Length: 110
Length: 118
Image 1 (cartoon, rainbow over the protein chains, first blue to last red):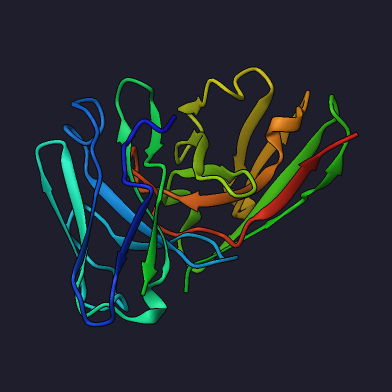
Image 2: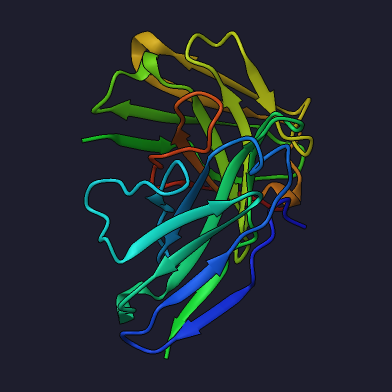
């Protein structure tokens, strides 16, 4: 059971906008910034969003992050087939003294 | 370009030991905290351990506390994870991942597979 909660799956058609939610508590998301990662099949996780809503250089602006209270979300607009991957949210947890992850959301592009 | 390259994985019997290494380049290693994160086959990500820039602060997940030891050598730009008393459930790809203090990691290595099996 993951400390952060994500839906196990999400889907959309090419060109659509999809949103992936993540929920936590005051000890993690409520007091620390959230990162989002994309993991393509057979590869290492790649940073997609950091500090709740910042994109590293090279990440398309189709990807955006937001955070309201303890419920951050990742939005992907103009969905493309290459976006099919697993997506994880993560944050530091002040009570556990460690990084906590969501269970991951498998995105399918129909 | 930030690069993290793990090595040292392999097949080990239950109760055995292994030492993982992570070679860092492309950034000032001593200025960043580091983490180990693992992923069991077909499962999600699980944080394993954290070490601060100077090794003064170290944290472990409860699942590995007392069995795993994290360390670093800033002169060699290297991170290590000593795995002792290995169990079947420790089977996973182990990633080293860069942090910037007590935050979720940014850059990740490609991972090294540890298989615990008799």
